[in-house]
Length: 135
Image (cartoon, rainbow, N blue to C red; front, side):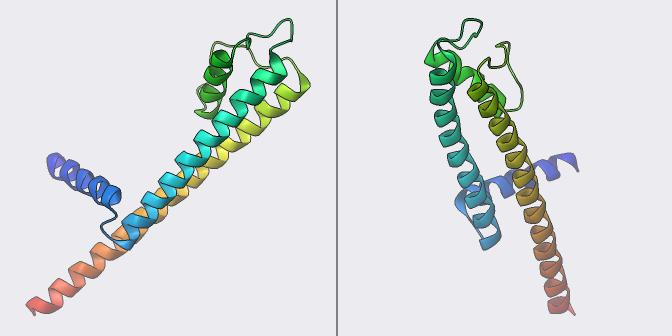
């Protein structure tokens, strides 16, 4: 039984990647949009953090690489060993990134929830249609 569930889940992932149905295409499009937008926000925030923080005395964001590391970990909601920003602009940027991360997680959860509900309805419709054919 567990292996059947894994195969079914793997099939759904494959169908999302190739947009097998309209439902799969919608989820794939949501995932692509979220990913592209987040990469763009990450790049923008890394450059901005570097420009805002690099001259602060007590900051650990001294290079573009450290800024990119810090922003990426913030957006992934895992934080990092790098201390939070020192400058007022850096702190505002940090709040923006936290809001972005929470919004992305909520949007992703909603998209997956909608996908699962729609796929459940489609499976139920298929079962009912197959049952009518057999009768």
